[in-house]
Length: 215
Length: 229
Image 1 (cartoon, rainbow over the protein chains, first blue to last red):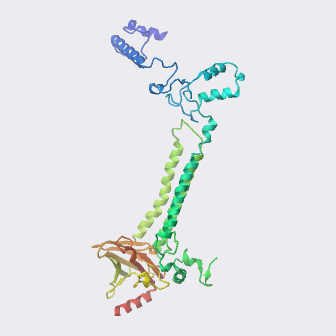
Image 2: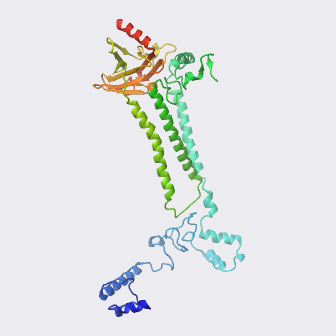
Image 3: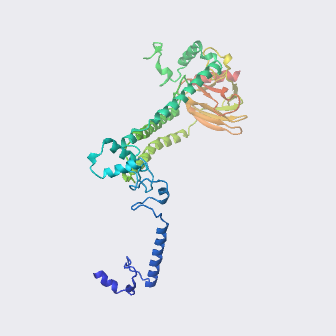
C-alpha cells in the first residue's frame, strides 16, 4: 500500500500501458518506456510465430530434435533438454518414449489408468519396453566387448611370437664363439679373478675363501 | 664391467659414482612410489560406479595435491643439487692423461713424464683368447694409479667420439679442435671397461676403453718400463 502511494507521486504513472511497473525507478521518460514495452512485445510475438505450431504443451525440447522423434511422446526433460533417447545411469528417465505407439500399446496405456493389479506380467513388460530400451540391470551388466579386445590383442601377440620364432630359426646369424659353454666358463672365472662388481654384483656372490658361490 | 643380464648400474670404483648410485636409488624410489600410486588410481577407475553430477571443486584436496608434489620435488632437488656441486669440486690431480679419439681406436698420451704415447685397438673376436671379453678387451690398456686424483683431457682427431667408464661415472665427449677436461678417482684396483659413446662411423661399436687400476708403485714401475722402450 505504501508502495502504491509512492508510485502515484511519480510523473506519467497514469500512462502505464500494461498494468506492470518497472522493478526499479529510473528517470526515463514515460514515452520511451512505452516504446520499449511495445518493441518487447512485438519481438515476443515474432519469436512465438517461429516456434512449431504443434509443439507439445510443457515440452522444453529444442526445435531440431523434435523433428526427428516421429510420433514418440515427450515425457520429460532428459539430461539437456533435447528430445533424444539414451539409457544413462546418471539420468535414468529419458525425455522421450523409446518406441512409437501402436494400437496395442495405446490400449495398454488406457488399461494402465485403472487398477495396476489387473495388468498381467507380460503387459507390464510390454509397457516398460515401449518406453525404455534396456532395464537398469541390463545397462549395468555390460556388453562383454572386452573379450573382443582381449582376443584381438592376443592374436597380435601370438603373431609377434611366431615372427620372433621364425626370425630366430631362419634369419639371424650364428652366435659368436664366445657364447659357448667353454668360453663363458673361462670368462666367468676371469671376472671373478678380477673381482668385477665386488660390492653388490657378481663377485659379491662368490665365496672366495671356499671357492664356491655364496648361498 | 657389465656382467651378463646386468639390469642396473655397475658397482662403483669411485666415491663420486657411489654418490651417483645413491642418488639414483633415492630418485628411483620416489618415482616408483608415484607410479604405483597413479597406477592404482587409474586401475581403480575401472571399478568406480559413483557419479556426482554436481562436483565442481574440492579446495582441500586440491591444496594437498599441489603442496605435496612440491615437497616431493624438494626431496629430489636437494640431493641432486648437492651432488651436482660435489662433482665440480676443485682438487689437485697427480696424473694427467690425454685421450684422443680416432676412427676407430683411442690413443693416449702421458705427458707428465717423458712423453708416453700409444694406440689402443680392440682385440678382434677371432684373435680373442678363451677368457677374453668380446668387444671389450684391447691390446694396450691405460694403466693408472689407484687412490690418486686423475685428470683426463679428451679430444678427437676426426669426428666426435665419447670417452666413458661407467663404473667411474665418467663420460666426456671428444670433439675435434677442443679439449674437454674432467677428473676421477679410483678407490680399488682392477680392470674398468667402457665403450665409445658417440656415433662415429662403421666401427663405433668396436673401439672400447680399458683402464688398469694398479697401486702407485706398480704404476711407477710401468711408467719407467715404458719410458725406456
